Image 1 (tube, rainbow, N blue to C red):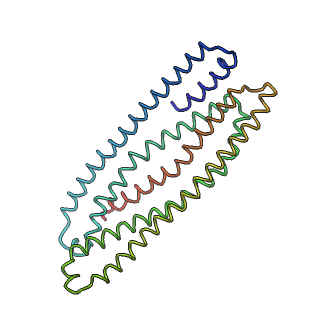
Image 2 (image 1 turned 45 degrees about the horizontal axis):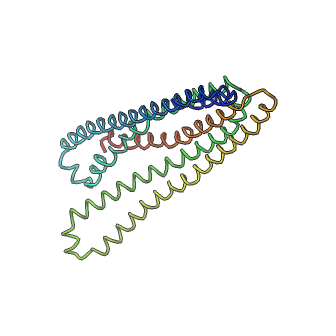
Image 3 (image 1 turned 180 degrees about the horizontal axis):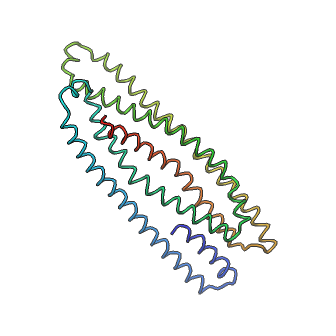
Length: 283
């Protein structure tokens, strides 16, 4: 429903505002409100259903995984830190759930929206479309660089989460021994070191996000500026309407949002794949 709104805005400006058709303007305004309501309802259904799907999948997988752990032999538990199966059963499973609730289905929807918007833009005015999309190659390079770097940091974050879980589980279980040998300070120092590594891994991912999103905003602003510049010339030459230029500005905003988010969604998939790989390989 997203691409419908710019089209309605174009019709409103060209067919009703330009001609002073007040009754028609009221009707199409009511139609736009109706579209917004339908879009909001569909958004609610999508969010609810995808998260429900993710939770149902994760419930079944976690049950099967725990049943699998119950079949492990005693030597496994003697050799493996207890935090490892805990991390696989709880934290990693939550990451896998995001594949369904915030990954695969959302990516498919965003790609479909991109195809529809770009196709319609070319249908309306191919020259204005090329001008507006001239920054896309730079955006794709930035997105690919961001995706590759953030994947590495996410893998590091998952590793540090597992290390934290292992450390806390082991030392809470063996707290009697820690206190008997008066090693509280030494163990606190060890925990601070692991906790610092976890923080550093997260800060690194924040660093990449802090660079990537402003770059996207700048490129989006440049595209809008180019559309206004080129579109104004076409309007003056009577080669395009004012409504078309406004619609293209709205389309550019709709285009850059999913492109920006696709990198993040692909990383959600990658995190889920890493977590699922650890579980499916038997820890």
